[in-house]
Amino acid sequence: MARMYTGKSKIIARYRSYHGSTAGSIAATGDPRRWAMEPGGKGPGILFAPEVHCYKCPIKHTYPGCGIACADYIEHMIRNESDVAAVLVEPIVGTNGVIVPPEEYMPKLRKICDEFGVLLIADEVMTGWGRTGEWFAMNHWGVVPDILVTAKGITSAYVPLGLCATSEKIAEYFQDHYFAHGHTYEAHPLTLAPAVATIREMQRLGLVERARELAPYVEGKLRELKAKHASIGDVRGKGLFWAVDLVKDQTTKEPFNTYSDKVSGKPLLVDQIAAKILADGVTIQAWVSHFVIAPPLIVTKEQIDHGISVLDKHLGLADAAVGQ
Image (cartoon, rainbow, N blue to C red; front, top):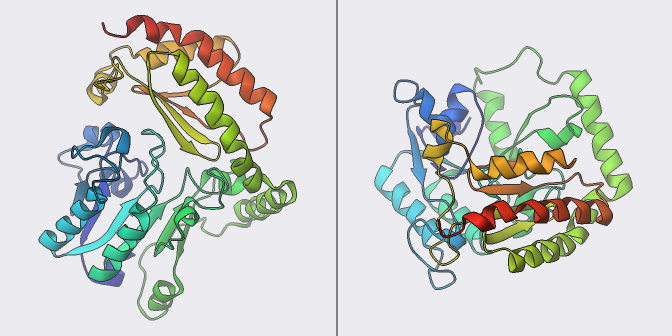
């Protein structure tokens, strides 16, 4: 859609990202799940920009003195590529670390895109539907994307449904310009009906507000954990979407494992810890060298306490490996 609407071909994504497993979406994915389909299967016109990661900046800057240099880098790419149709971002990076941008980043990126006639695409598959304390994460910064894609929470995962929404201006364009893509089951009532029911139930229970209200509680618990464990480098998140980053050294921020370790099949410390946590009846997502903390929006404080206490119990494995 972005290519057809703009008449341009290139898409800028970011390295710490995951966008899906189809040919186009995996080509635009920055993490190592892309590597297996390269070079022959790499989608044409996909470029990667640095992620916005203030804890461990890939371009060696320090916030706030950096002036949001990671956004400036994307502007530099656009100027030098000249044929950029869209910038594709997870507003808050999901699997790859729940990386929350500073307040200035998304408004600055929106301004850059507008200046150069580039569309801004928000992948809210993980951050949508109340997960971060807003219906959509982009709302945190008052920024409206040109295209928004979402899934998962739209039906509370009872049935699979993905959604692509555009601005009215883009939608109007395709009234008079043939759009050559479609799916047999698009707009299927058996998937749309659960979406409507889910939205109404979320409204009835005030789950978006609840995620926002529980955020300080979760953050407090995780920061207490960080103070206890030498293996925790950083905790970050919004709403009920958090990450706990494990490091060998809090000063150098060196992780226990890398993307290459993951791809090669090397045993990962986070997986070993996650297995022990699961044996105690708690599930947690482990990825390379961090954990994603994303409980259901109906979670109670008691359940939060229990889950974090089980994580606390088994982080000794990581603490013992610090400095090795």
